[in-house]
Image (cartoon, rainbow, N blue to C red; front, side, top):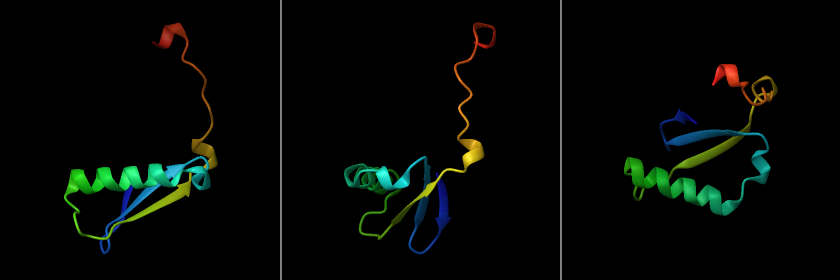
Length: 67
């Protein structure tokens, strides 16, 4: 997550498939942000962007030696 701008407060989330994020989960995140940072009555904006492909590479499970 990243704080994108100031007016209105904008939060940027990165996801593998932003279009698949259900509206109820978006509402949940908005409500938790309002609760945590005191944005009651303030419009806030949530932006969901696709995660960069190079960051999506699955590394697999760590071997026992790396645990």
